Image (cartoon, rainbow, N blue to C red; front, side, top):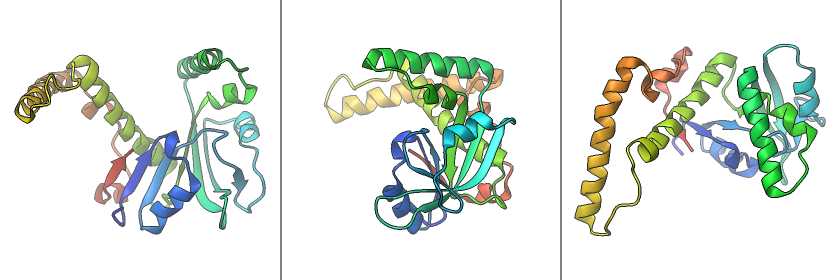
Length: 214
C-alpha cells in the first residue's frame, strides 16, 4: 500500500481484517458490500439491521457512519454509502439473484431482493472531502475498468497467446492492444468509450489521490 492512495474493490474484499491492514498502512478503502457479508453495527456499536435500514429508506441515498464487527479487535469504523438503483437495474439484479439461487439449488432469501435494489458501499473517505455523489462516482471508475477488460476479451478477442514463445506472445498482445487503442479513439467520438462514460470526481482531494481498483 502507498500512504494516501484509495483502494477500490468489489465484494470479495469485504474482509474486515484485511481492510484494517490497508487502513493501517495509510490508505483509504472503497468497497462494494453484500448485505450479509459482515456483521453490521451502528455508529455506537449496537447491532444494525441493514435490510431494515434499506427497506425503510424513503429517499434514494443513504450516507451513515457505521461500524463492522471483527473477529478480533475493536469494531472497524466506516462510512456506509448506498444508492437506490433504477427500476430497470433493480429488476435485472433480482432476476440474476433468482437465477443464481436456482442454479445453486437453494431458496432465495427475501432480504436478497431488498438489497438488490441498492448499490451498497463502505469507505473510509470522509464527508468533508468526498460527498455521497463523489463516493459513488469514484466507485464507477472501477466499473469503467471492468468494461475495458470486457472489451479486450469480447470485442478485441484477447485471450491466451497462441504460443509460449515470448516473442510470439508479445506480438499477440501488442496487436490486440493496438486494435483497442485505434477503436477506442473512434468510440470516444460517439461517447461509448469507458474513458468517456463516467462522471468526473468533483471533490478537490480526488484529483491528487491515486486509486487502485481490485
